[in-house]
Amino acid sequence: LTDTPGSCCGSGPSVVYLPGCNPLAQTGRSKLQKQRASLNQQIIKQMRMRAGAENLLKYGPNSRAHTAKHPCTWIVRVCTKRGSLHNAQNTVSFLNGMLSHLKATFTHTPSYDMSPAMVSMLIQLMIAQAQECLFEKNALPGVLNQFTSLIKMAQEAAKVSEIYDQVHQFMVQTPIKDNVPLFWSTMSQVKTNHYRAMAHHFLASALLDHELGPNDDEDQQEKTLSQVYDQLPEGCSPLGILKNKDERERIGKAHIRCAISGHEEALRNYSLCQHLEKLEALQEILKASHRRSLDKYSDYDNEEEFVDYVEAPDIISKTEHKAEMELPAATKVKVTDFFQRLGPLAVFSAKQKWTAPRKIRVCAEDRDLGFTLKGEAPVQVVSLDPLCPAATDGLKEGDYIVAVGDKDTKWMAVSDMMRLLKDLDEEGIEIQVVSVIDNSPPMPTKSATFSGNLPKTYSMICLAHNDEDKPPKNRKVMKKSSFLSWGLKNKMKSASTLSLPTDDHSGALSWNKPIPTFPTSSTYNNNNNCH
Image (cartoon, rainbow, N blue to C red):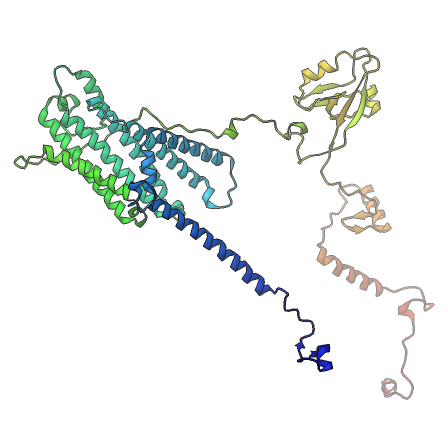
C-alpha cells in the first residue's frame, strides 16, 4: 500500500491506491456485459418496431383488418386477384428451376437440408404449389355450369390432389421426416384431401345437374366420361350412366359422399396441427367447401328411398395447364470459361507436369519439315527426323505444339496446324513446344558392390564370378535367408572363425597370447599347483 504525496504532507485525507491497478481498464467480464447490453438494446428496438407495426395494422383505415389476428388475411385478400395468382405461379416456377439447378450442380452438400432427397421433395412441393395456382386461376372467374367444363375441373382438381399426395409421401419418409416441420406435412395432407373432395364434388355436379338431352352430343359426352374413369363399377358403362337417370343419380350420390368424407378428413387433419389452427382463413375455406357438398347431397337425398352405398370410382387426373419450370437467368447466360486459355483439361491438367515453353525454329527443306503431327487438340510431334533443323534446335519426339508465331494453338486440330505450317519460306517460323515431365520415381542405380541393401565384399564378387563360370548343372541353389537370421548366422561364422587353429606362433594374435596368472601368494595358484 502506498500513500499519496498529499497525505505525506498532512494537508488532506490519506488515499490508498493499489500498485498496478487501473480502475478504468476493461476486463473480460466488463466487455461481455457491454456486448450483452448492446444486444439487449437491439432486441428491445426490434420489439418496439414490431409493436408499432401491429398497432398500425390494428388501428389502420381498413376495417376488415381490425378483427384479423394473423397476417394470412392480407395474403388471402391479395391472392384473390388473377394477376396476383399469376405472379405467385411465376415465383414458384422460378424457385422450382433454381432448386433443380442446385440439385444438378451442388453435389457435396454440407448438411442434409441440401441433400438430393430433400431438394427433390422441395421441387415436388414447388410443382404442387404452381399447379394449385393454375387451378385457382382457372376457377377464379367461375366454372361454367356445363357437363364438359365440370368434368375438366374435376380432373384438374384431381391432378392437384395427386401432386400434393406425392409431396406428402416424400415428407413422411424416414430421412426427410426428421428434417421437415410437422406443419408442412399436415398442410400437404389437408390439401390432398381438400382437392380430392373438390374433384368428386365437380363430377357429382356434372352427373346430377346435367341430364342427357336430345340436343346434346351423346358421343362427345360418352367420350368425356370414359376418360374420367379407369374402372367403372360392375355392370356399368359410360353410355349407360348417361342414359339411365337412376344409375346417373346413384353414381353422382356416391361421388358427393366421397366429397363429404374428404372435406371431413381435411377438417380433421386441420384440427390436429396447432400451427394450422391459427390460419382462420383456411378453416373458413374448408368449412365452406364442406357445407357446399352437404347442401348438394341434401338436394338429392330422399329418406324414403333405399340407400345404395356404392363406392365411387377413382377419378383419372388430367390437366391442360401443366406447371412449367423456369430456369434461373444464370443458366441462360453464355460465358467464357476461365480455364480455356490453359488448353484441353484432358491434357493440360494438374495430373501431369510440364516443362517451360521452348522456342523452336522450324524450316522446310524440300517442303519437308522433318516431322509429322498427330492428335486433335493439342497437336503432338511424332516421327521426328533427328537430322532435321527442328531437331537440331531442340525439338523432341512427343512434344506438344502450344503456339505458332504469336497464335495460340492449344485448341487447334491437325488440319488447322498444317495450314499454318504449309507454306514456309527459307527463314521458317518460330513455334513453342512443351514436354511432359516423367512423374515416375527414379530407379536406384545398380552397383557392382551393392546388393539387397547390403554391401558386397570383394570375396563375394569373386565367388559370384566363379559361380557364373561353372556349368548350370553343378551350380548349387542357395536358400535365401531372412533378415533376422542373417545377423545370427554371421555371429556364428565369426565365432567358428576365431576357433580355427593358426600357424602364427609369434603371439601377435589374441588367442596366442599367454594367459595371465595371479600372484604367487594367491590361493588360486596354490590350488592349481596341487592339481
